[in-house]
Length: 284
Length: 314
Image (cartoon, rainbow over all chains, first blue to last red; front, side, top):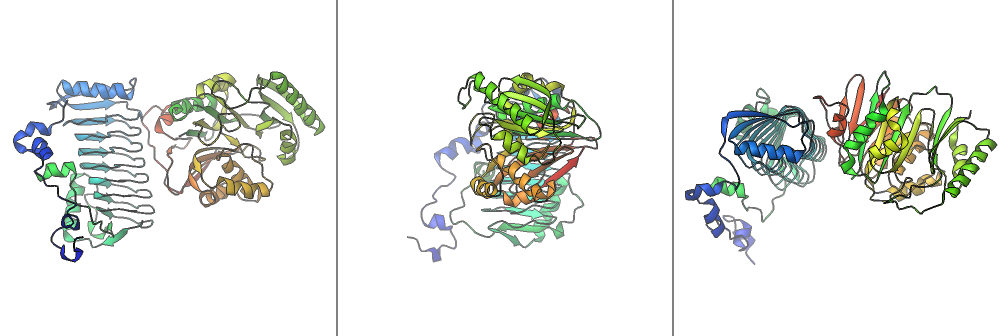
């Protein structure tokens, strides 16, 4: 067994021989070699022109029909699509792995914008549970409130709600940034593993419960801390980052970030330094 | 999974039967083993309306035992005799289905406990609701099927709650369907989405205090729990707040009385609820699409937070 007292330079996992992965493996060479840039695109994605704009009324469509039509419009090169009358339908805009400027003129139901990678989305309404679940990259802005499990398991991108959100925001998130303009419910950051959550308002009970890693910034009152969540020092670097992020997010630009609380995981997991696929892309 | 929906018009009446049907039908993907309505209709308030059943729907998917219609007739006859013995006069009688009946009763007693116990001592008979405004209608099938079967789309009133059920903890039958009447309180009904994990502990305690359970559905506990609190002098809202710690598990539930509608959400906020609130209407449901069936235009809605209790008056 490795001597754990002499492993300060390497991670414990590496010293124990349990973490041998490097970014030169066969899989990495094949898919993430910058000389093969075309391989970084998903199968079935399209070259779109952001200046080519169209509208789609989904009032009388089912969610699969609407999503199929969005895909069809992207295949025709439309880079800006305005969705009319979403009327709280579930699962709209899911699985978009494309650069796209997508605007919803109304509210979405459950699982809106789930499993996406790349689109810039503005929702002029509210979203139901599990909005933008598994987001890989891109930006999703919600103008009103959001339901529970907001940004569940996201791995990248920016997810912004200008109103308040329900419980378990950022549950199991593995990267990216979630910004809340209003209040957040119970169990925010539950089991989060990476990434950052910014809440300008109050937050409910059990904040950051069982979090592995990542950072939560809170501007208002905290109902209670969850297991493993502890306060940390808010550094100058944190404040600069918060200011930049809030400005880019068009939310709370004048918010006094110096008074925000910073919450991190109080425990450090000994085998927790594997990179996520999106981080590997970023490393290259 | 199950879905719940409710609405209350403030200061006016509306076609709540049709509106609730639309809301529950929008939630039918959450379960269509059975659907139930608790409608608070416009009445003159003189007579009690008793909805009761003398048997079960034994149609496809039912977990009930087939019985001959003559058995239902016999039970009805005993109910009629019992009512006469208690001095309750049947003003109007409707038999929508062989097993389902609606009586308007002239009966001038405030305490319905003894009345209910006498009626329900008849084997196979269960009072679904008792009140001067409330009518609980529940049966197997989705919202539209039940609405059509009982012609509920014409019911005009101030408020209503309903439930689309996916049977998980108990049988596919009417006795396990929601809403549950807040026995023995006039005009109290409850619907629930979730799972209560201290059902048996609470049931034993409440039964020892003289409360009655008709099914083995955990959701019935909420109605009985609140009824017991109110029997001891608590207001509806106080009872609901006590339920946040008295009931264990995950739940969002609605409770309605003659002139109010309330919601409660457990401290983990594990079950969904979307709420729309304006000066003249409150509408809420497990999913926003339920509200959209009543208000298709763009509206502002929100999720109540964990441990939240709200009550609205008509």
